[in-house]
Length: 418
Image 1 (cartoon, rainbow, N blue to C red):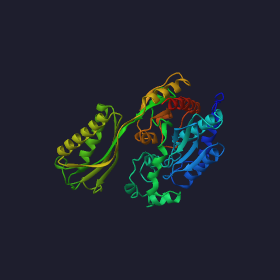
Image 2: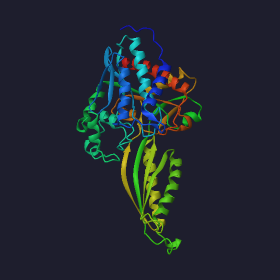
Image 3: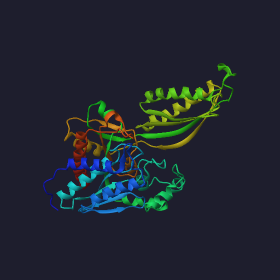
Image 4: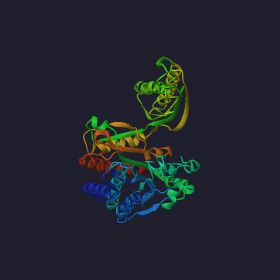
């Protein structure tokens, strides 16, 4: 098929669709598109209604991911991905910007090539990227990547006690069949994803867009300090074996560890026992989340955390035990696609910045599967996401759609050349 002159993406249409989706699936508390719920299904139908206007094949895979395929002259596939699901009370752009911007690019490519581009173009809405309901992020993309343990996922329950498997059956998915989604990446030659930054870096640099270097590695552990319960009135301060004191000193130390290695460390939850006002804390359990783009520095941060915890425990007459929660290695994106992303940004705005992603994204799972991958970030106002006040300037949203469109053109040519 001979290409026609490239039509422009309709930026006003994308903005209108983003706002329409917000009105359909949000309320005064923010977005409510939690995966496998009625509002998530409504969001899916919103997308399907618009895909029906295009010459694409639409299907739901074995894990519940939704695919729209525009067949090309080559069976090699360029994927554009995102997720419609949100956290409860989330922002209006997190995830759905990726999908609706990708939809607009799909329209442009279809119009330019008369429904038959030089390579096959696919738009995917990944199921349950957020993990808000069952606590397991990247559900759908991990099923496609192969990093998926059915037995472990079968144990998951939501706050009402509903099993993940039961929730999936409500939307036509069988958990045991979900790994069959791996077949969806068999012909994937590249993957693109646009996302709001969800952090303050681009705003601090006064830049609308950035090219993403990769997703950081994550180590998550529990630390349990154990001391001795004692009466809060009769026990002198200098003889207490206060587990909370040791934990508190550790909580301060993680900031020094993060600064030393150039990463981030977070104590996200703290529980104490016996948990009453009249007792010195006998047991204090906390969670630690550590992230870094460099695997060696991530390992060093975890080692420093263990050393510090043991030191503060010993100083306080306590002990400390460590428990494993979860980890994922740093995942760098493809250097040639990073260059292409940067070049695409510079065609629509004078300056850009390369930065890692602290949050995880479906792009990380696709890259783990061996598919060349890159992401674009668009500035988040005040660096806030997972919150109803999440926002991005409309002119920046428009620039992000344009940059994704330019990147798609470059990536299609890149796929053809390989």
